[in-house]
Figure 1 (cartoon, each protein chain N blue to C red):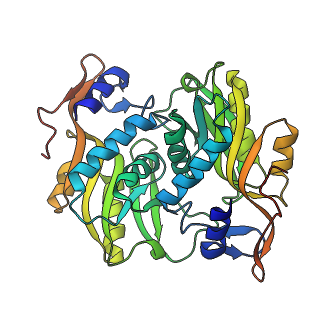
Figure 2 (cartoon, helix red, strand yellow):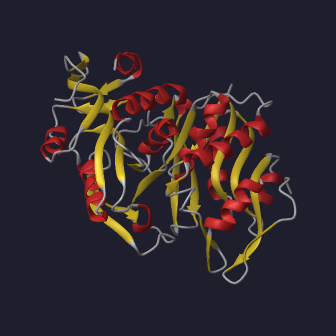
Length: 196
Length: 196
């Protein structure tokens, strides 16, 4: 998606070889009208899939998921990291390592909000090692629901998550795919935006 | 706001005297078209205040803030709890106790995203003891910006946060104000939705 790649070139900042900071428009300060355009693109790609629910994970996925959901007119469920005092006992639970935070989280969704009849679109900002996305897929599987696909804003294709998730048979649509990056050259995108 | 009070009566669940679970539509599963109506109401109340930025706090404020921002056509900044590996050193920082999680958090916003020229609308799902909201006000003050007000979905008026924040001179608009609640009677709202 050229709009996104242009924005990453303009406002993204590469730290070392692994960190792409997009906090000017995506995951700290959020350019809401821009993110709505990303949501419109997810809708274009998944609109014929019978999506009845969008599942994401706190925190940075939530805004993207909500703005995407306005096109689908479906509810968003966001998975929680850790257990908090007023969450019910009756949860689906999976586990994920966080690359950015260097720790492992329990990923939880109330059983009340994921059902066998659900056709779920997963939404997240980044796909790198795929731990968070795998955890979301596991939660839907536990509930007996169907994952219709995953809409990712930025995929780091040099990390194994995208390949692993696609090998599980899940359709992954990434709006920008990074081939590699470093501080000298900045971000180098894959030749095509299409699914690898 | 009657639409919200009706929804709380229908889908909210009271646990003990202090916990109102609204996870069916507001802060775990999110009814996006409903929350957009809350955003429209925040816009109606604050549209003449020159708002150029919405500030909220992860996680459950983010979706509400983003859907509200679509009416104002301004960016959202969400404050982060704790410090993560790829946040910059250059942060505004405050501190807040979490009622639901029983711990204290550092509340952080990059200095890049809050400026003296900012006219900030604060958005959050709950106002009870006011610790999170106070932390957000402090962050804006550190940056030299102006808080034009706070838009709160549900205020527990029997807890001291609302009074304390208003005594600081901040306009607080809560879409539903709870006078008291318990498992027998459910939620009892204040006679008027207007600011106390």
